[in-house]
Amino acid sequence: MLCADDPLPFSPSRVLIAGVTGSGKTTLARRIAALWDLRHVEIDALFHGEGWTPRPTFLDDVRAFAAEDRWITEWQYTSRGTDRILAPRAQLVIWLDYPFPLVRRRLLRRTIGRRLFRTPLWNGNVEPALWRRDAWTGDNDILRWQKDTRHKWERRMPHIMAEHPHLPVVRLTHPRQVDRWLTVARQDTDR
Image (cartoon, rainbow, N blue to C red):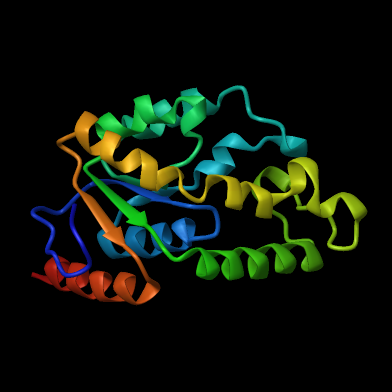
């Protein structure tokens, strides 16, 4: 496993960003896509259809972009089968393993903003209004989801590394490490 100060042994063309909900996977994917000229595929946009229903073509869409030469995406929907498609094709995993209080604050800020301003998301969906009684319960309880899955990657990484020895993992434990790592990656790109 690599850390923020370790140089990459090569310039990857297919990258997965792992981390708990609210860690900043999509934001980092966009930054790296611009830095390395990779196509960013936002996997939530492939999964969520109208009315928050799963799109029936989801796995076919994942297979299609995974077959391409250059991409970056958030590593999500593993229970839906994305592991079998993405991990064998990926060349690098970046694991955002931040402290829980930090990701909790980020998720709260993001969720409140999206709900307050009715921000359109994937395929015309919007999160429930902030003031709705059911906005924080059941399927809408993103905070519970985050809490319930916060140790997912910590438990999975040893298995991922054993099953996919070709796949280097960069573990970043704080946003300052991301910035430091991106500075090194930018310098490597400029060479």
